[in-house]
Image 1 (cartoon, rainbow, N blue to C red):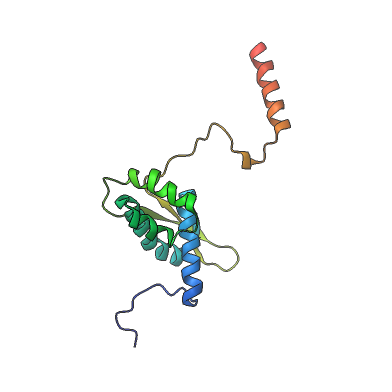
Image 2 (cartoon, rainbow, N blue to C red):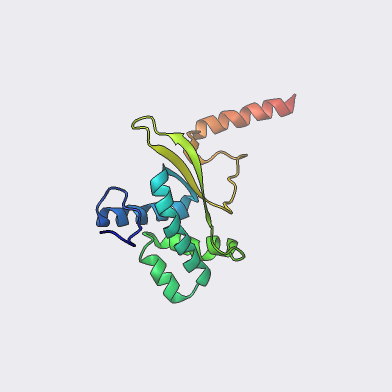
Length: 150
């Protein structure tokens, strides 16, 4: 009997589930928002909140505990120096789950999971991943110069 063993099993073996959640919490802390299924988002929420609580503690032991879960030293550094100070006044509830809809392939319900005090992205300047090449940027600048000249 499974009495008092309430955990999200997610239909996979323990080693697979632990590895997946470690990867997801690393991605969540790196990008501050990810898209996943509802069940995975709910399982991830507890682990992410634990990591941010460790970041708020800020001592060496907390950093080592976080490094045992988070897969990147850079993300751990970001957690302790940028993310955790933003949540200094908040006692838990660091993540938000927003329902997105259903996945086209299998109909699984999808959700955004994001940090509550997420930094807004700067929408005025396009990112380098947006597909705008240097040639297109040059054309854009030429057009802006022509408009200014008139």
